[in-house]
Length: 168
Image (cartoon, rainbow, N blue to C red; front, side, top):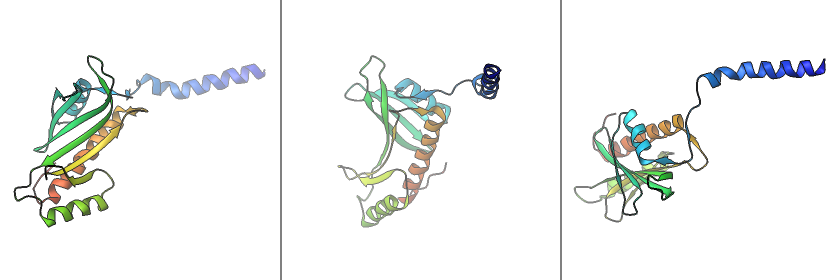
């Protein structure tokens, strides 16, 4: 009788989780190829194309709302079609009058106010904003897409903070 109860318990548990299996498992990334990253970006409405950086790692050139950015890859496995475990979205903007005190104050205020992304002047004096994603221990496709949406928000907040007009 005790074994029957255990069998019924396992059957009931299986019936509770079976619908989730029937819907299919969501893809989880520990690393991602440049091709797959471009597919996901394009599926979310970004303009995106794949190239390679000076190390031969995937580099995605992309655009959202008229603002250009790059997705730089790190932790790549060196294969012919490398998978990479870390991503960094970066957008650099040339300031027509150089970096003013107001621009620097805006970047400092941005860094203090917002949780995601970081703003700074790069080595060439360009206004720069970036956002990093670590895939190393696994990230679902939905979570990756959510991070891309956060990046878009970061990017637009930054560009609008510079006094340029961008709409999503």
